[in-house]
Image (cartoon, rainbow, N blue to C red; front, side):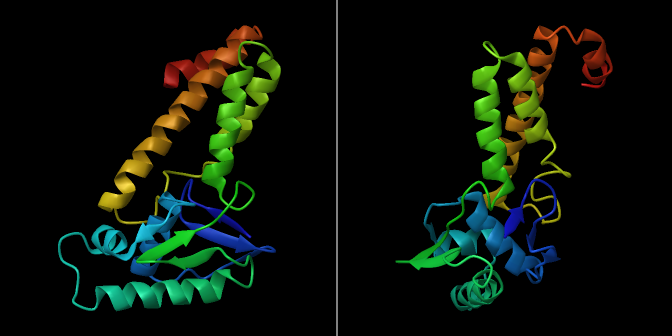
Length: 183
């Protein structure tokens, strides 16, 4: 299973897109993915999804959304969403979540810029190709996602800058001129 957030939120397993539900249910998943591998309290999820106007049934609604998401995700990858005292955790690795893979490629590529520009450029190019739009692009902005969307956007720009540095170190000045002008 692969979950993508570097563009519209989507999940795919064996060539089939998974139904992640309606906007609020998708937002619950997005809040968990924005803090992947960290426990997120039900109160935090409620605040991020409903802002200042949660319904009285918000806690039960979050539980229902997570339960539904589990039924969709668990057959593809066990342990993706698990309950924690007072909340939930989305447990994924870089093979399952594009944002984690992106961060790993960027870190590795940036490490290679001074010593192996060709490898750095390749890794950073691969990282850039993971994007298909704005992070979490199909979801209404939520307080919980604004920080993560901004962080990922800044990392995307840093990856582009590092790749261009690597391309320049390889003498590919002509190849990056148009891109630099656009930036």
